[in-house]
Length: 502
Image (cartoon, rainbow, N blue to C red; front, side, top):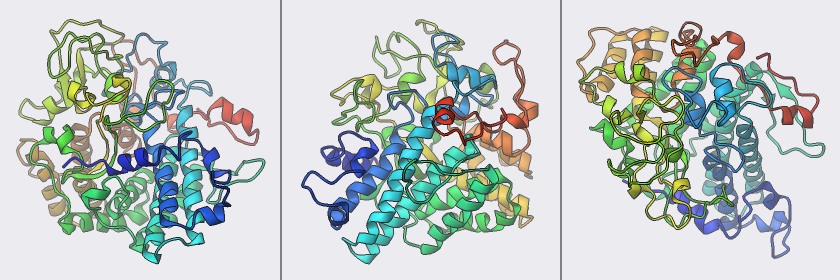
């Protein structure tokens, strides 16, 4: 199926949300009604909720920096190089790749993008108290906003660790106490548990609402956070959530791994959560980076001056970021069907070679001309490739790992791991360990932003993220690198903030 209804809703709301900044919520509406009166209709509440979803689309390029979430994570790992035109192109990525980031070379826009999201979520949570719809809808709007807020904080927590935390919007001087990573986790998990306990969100939304956060998405977020924190006290609960998704019958593996990454595969049976992008009626352009439309990700992660072929027209322009390491291609068994879907191998094709180019690119998000053909603005900014966040394959591998970690059943862990392997065309394992599950995750999720965090949480980062034989990464990861530096601009704006010991 191919449904992008949340994106369509954004287009419909564009006339009311033209600026895409939070000033929309700081003033009376154009008709002069106070906010307490404006947000007493279902249509206006849905506008606010749509605005809370909007920052999901921003990180790939928000007009300040290119920070697609999967690229941000992958440049920290061991499957890709940074690439681009030179070591000075998107220098923050190159510096973070070599574990030498600083306040001026960090993922600064994630901070501004997702705190904007948090602010908008807080608005929705406030506005639903004004009424304006049925009790069932109001509860759903509230829980969607609260779940989005946890998701936004989760990203900040993963990267920065120690960040300001607030659940109600700030007043002058617009600062909040900076909490430690452990304190952030301790605050978020009870909130996430309360959202789940409300049972206000469906396990899976109908196709007409594809793009909304769901109960299954909440479960996946819960397992991700518990595993990253190594919170053994919550493993059993996380396992039960994975089992509930498995037992729901609403999700399954797609038969062909390659089909996941096609437009027709978006919101397929395997998809638990995606960020919608659409080339139809796209308004995103160089002067309007946060407007409704597509994603620049395929342009970022593809070869420069393409000669034509493989479904991408001659003269198409990629920027050469995120070239895949040859070692990543080579780790796949030749029988593994994931290899050719994951690795776009164009060795032998001539084009303009950029920095660190290996002629192997990320096939999951590679560009196709058909994926931006309906765009009326700049096509290379508006591919319709949805960003996959959580898939059922991860549910199975989460369940396998949690089952082993809790000692609740190696037979189930083996069954779930082998389901993923068998879909890839590989023989079943006879036994399984947590290392086997991490290895399977590596093969399954290349380019999806999972690998670096798996290395950190499993204790493998220090031995894996070391200087390479090419002279590109000259520094080794250490535990102090777990949390990237806070942006200097944020430290200047709030002198009470403490920089991470990077």
